[in-house]
Amino acid sequence: MKPQPVRVVVVDDHILFRRGLVGLLADMGDFEVVGEANDGEEAERLIKILLPDVVLMDINMPKMNGIEVVKAIRKARIPVRILMLTISKNDADLIGAVRAGADGYLLKSSDPDELRQGLLNVYQGQGALSQEVTGTVLKALARSSEANTGSILSEREMDVLACLARGLNTQQISNQLFISENTVKTHIRHILDKLDAANRAGAVAKAVQLGIIQKDNE
Image 1 (cartoon, one colour):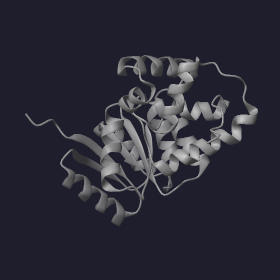
Image 2 (image 1 turned 90 degrees about the vertical axis):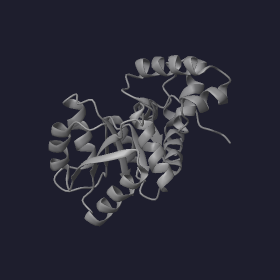
Image 3 (image 1 turned 60 degrees about the vertical axis):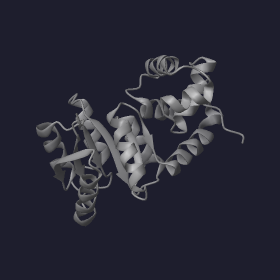
Image 4 (image 1 turned 45 degrees about the vertical axis):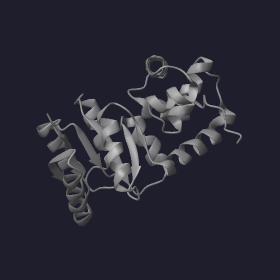
């Protein structure tokens, strides 16, 4: 039996881009677009009514920006995954989005396969970061390294956190560190608890804030 499509609400104030995105998702076959919003206020209202599986949302919008919508949805404790899709590579937007509770952050320059996989990843409870955004995170980590306040994580948890900052999923971390996927999940759970983060992207953002990852010297 074919699995049920992932129910998606698309939020973007540029109507031509939004309609193109809706058509692209329809062609993929994995997704059902159940709603569209033109601004942040409309997005918040639709999300609360439709309760989609995933919200695909821009940051810069009228009335309420994407980060404000994420905060409102998380405050309302609505069980929905949120993937930001934006042109912004700005550190403040990236860190602000994941600290607010976004599950992933992709750039509009992403190719269709990256978008599809990103949506499926966040739907399954994993993070999604564009490669270019990963570089932004690592640069932010480097800038904050001098203010390092000391790690609250174990050495292995630090290894796993570094992999998360690179955008690796559970299987990739398992292969990278030569540990089982269950062990990876256990380490991630401990990381989330220790950093008081809601998800993987939030853990990376909190690490940026605390400066607990050392600069990559490579």
